[in-house]
Length: 114
Length: 115
Image 1 (spheres, each protein chain N blue to C red):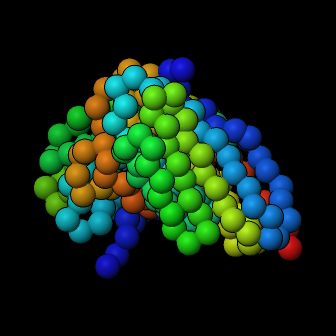
Image 2: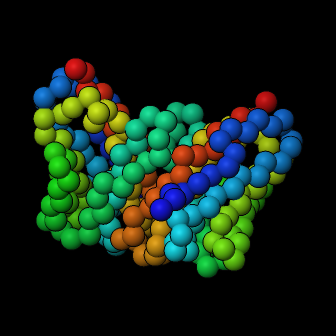
């Protein structure tokens, strides 16, 4: 069974541009979570989608947005890129929105803003 | 405590040593405590999800305990091997009194096992 897949693996963008990151959850998982790991920091919660709706978001500006498609895959969009958006972006999925459900992570997209 | 905190930040041990590290989390409104292992160039992988006070879970040489009343969990590795080298993360939903569905991660403990 395929795990969580993310694309692209690496992305280089110029300040001010937009970046789009994609995530396909494990088959049967309806919840998708996005996390950011900036240099020197821990994993920071960005967004949670479940059944096509945004259920929760972390302390990030509105230029971080996303959506979840009917097949439960998800897209993270970062508008008006800033240098400090350079980070590893991890997507995770789980079979349930309950707190006891473990998260399965993808390998991440490394975004570099120059 | 409002956030999830882990100690130590890093740890170097020799092959065969046993080791342990700590995760502290908010004890109020406890729901669950997750442990993940993150090896370099790989994805974080779940080790344990713990929900009951006094719970103890084991997977091979790795075990974890949970104290929800005082808000801490210990992860133990018995007879460390070089392949145990990784960052160990703990996470709590609803840490800091925030809303449902959000896993708040600690900064992690970086374990290096020297042959």
